[in-house]
Length: 379
Image 1: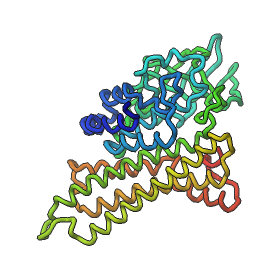
Image 2 (image 1 turned 90 degrees about the horizontal axis):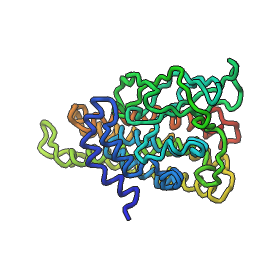
Image 3 (image 1 turned 90 degrees about the vertical axis):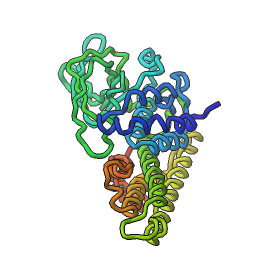
Image 4 (image 1 turned 120 degrees about the vertical axis):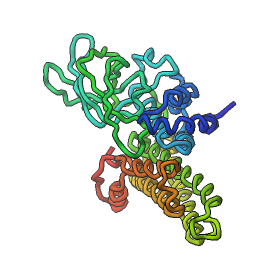
């Protein structure tokens, strides 16, 4: 039987075939999104009753990494789709018909909070959300909303998801960026759309399922998923570097690039930086997973080390890309060089709030017995 990781690797040629188109059109090609859905990759960690594989976090990291190695934006798109299937609560218990079709793709955004006014039988939902990666390929949009009753904002639940079907939300072309152009992280607008009671779900609540996935804290899983994209991008950079270093003869030089000590030093430092950060994130992810599998509380120092490692890995991968781009010279700046897009994409990952550099400092605070300041360690 083909494993999920093998399926992801097999999709590499298709992903690379459409990578330029995705970058140009600023959205994931529908052919790639369909392949992800058909292969079951979007539902990788989802419950088996919803067509998922219930894959553990370590497999998730490797699958996302494999796709990002073919193209960073494709890896980002898959990662976001995986997160929505994995994290939306309470596992579609009252609206499983919405995802009965295995080709259903979910997009969403927590970058803003819309409004859901309670009416008979459901809610009237309005709002605007940013950074809705993959929305062009989705048939459901998970809109983060606050509940209003008789015009008054309710304090609990603080935020819930309203599931909006395609045709009831509008996509605003707002993803005018350099890096991760192909992720299609455009804005979404919903104007006074009726959402039935059963299509609203509290993503802050515990599900009725007592599985390790249900018990795994949201913040860490958001972090290891972003690290996975970074690992794939950095490995892609090294893949391209080896090809260039063995073929390129620099101007005014009698020998090829790989014979230069500076280039040899760069690849040595890049390889060890990537491999060390990847190994640590996988090790700590497995430690947290073992805790939830055994129904133990995750110690605060383990959470701190985990977030330090994930944030450091995003920095490490960007450093790896910088090392190889500097080593190959002006080739990395040419628009037809894969390294040009790789360099743009690598910067985006380390800017994301879940693996931002401030979590390294915050993790240090926790290790020293202080209370965390940042949301990732307070979750």
